[in-house]
Image (cartoon, rainbow, N blue to C red; front, side, top):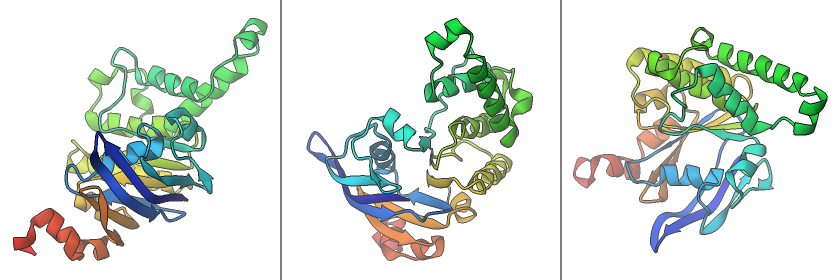
Length: 250
């Protein structure tokens, strides 16, 4: 589904990614791992249009999306979350969801004059309710973020990310900051989303979380792919072990 072919990214002469290539399976969960500074978030940004690759191509469902702006990548069916929660604190969760819906498809001013936007907002309300119910955050819909547990807000991020019915969802460190129970709940939500036919690529540092979810794992180090395969295959890869443990420990 997602085909990364010899992607390179440079910042002022510094090579952040170098000849990164892989193809995600058509279904399931692909995990992108690696030490801090390996280039994982840079790769996410190159895929989603926040960074323009210096060389190489990104293709999605057979379409070349290299260098597309984020709005265009989104319209191809790729949605993402970020390491930090991008939630407006003054708005309740439902209001934050409406902003996501407006970002996908704006109501027409001409239709507003004619009173024809009622169906737009009715559809928006229905879809928002469906997504919030899907990840079990409906009871928090009228509450502002400061009064909601962090684990619930992480689930809310998933609700907002699936609002547009994406084909692929990119999750950037979804388990960061969560306790064990919250991680288990999040894992269940991720599996539920995959069950709806959504392909997932996630950056994550928690190996236990990855081992319970990932069908395929790719390891980056210093901007290059040093291992890929099943979790077991990557875990036993000597280059991967060196990246995490150092030469003396392998």
